Length: 175
Ligand SMILES: [Ca+2]
Ligand SMILES: [Ca+2]
Image: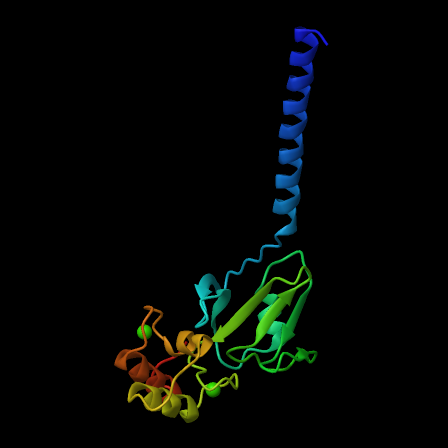
């Protein structure tokens, strides 16, 4: 093989590699099914096992499955799973802290309902009690519950959040 032919062969090889890389990058980008929301915040985080988790926060108590889904924009299919990882099929079921949203490509999001610290989807005196017990160190909260307890969204769970929880329950404060 002449030097010139070898050079051309190398150039074609390099060209093919570049094209292949461009194609695979495109495929990966197309695979990631992004979701957006005007009502909720979608935030990356870590759970207590230091695993990557994406949370959907700022969901208000008493939100139904159908309302929740209507606030998410995606081209993919959505399925809600409860805390036992069972599929939630009723549209009027209440979304609770710790439930998850799974997309058609198996991407999973953990849902956080603000102030729903005992994970029943509602804001009651039971949530205030659980927060009080946590504040005095008599119980621990999991990652989703910690996010639910951060009612003023400043990244920490403090007496300010406890005060806000009390005011929300008594109606002195509204979402
Ligand atoms: Ca609750
Ligand atoms: Ca806070």
